[in-house]
Length: 127
Image (cartoon, rainbow, N blue to C red; front, side, top):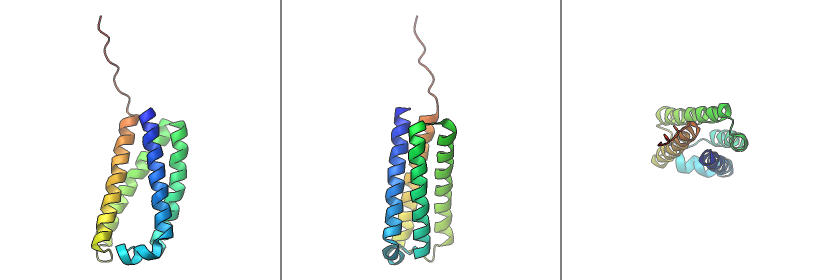
């Protein structure tokens, strides 16, 4: 469970960082990555709220809440790939790479969270 707490805290920190960057650099990201400013600001604000939730879950480690974080992260990954497909013509090459890279990181976090939540079989004591 200690590793799960660490992974959740890492998730919260990375999410908050991404949220701040999306809001603060929305106008830069529009030209550099092809993200519309309103989308960057809305996604960034949503990520900041999500980061607070994930940080709170890291303090309790309630299995139901951890599963909700895993589900939320999984939905984010699916939405990210959906966005790449639907907004292909509006994104720059760097934008596509950025969305795929961040989705891959979020997927890795979800896998680590799932692994941390899954109970490990106890070692069989030898007689």
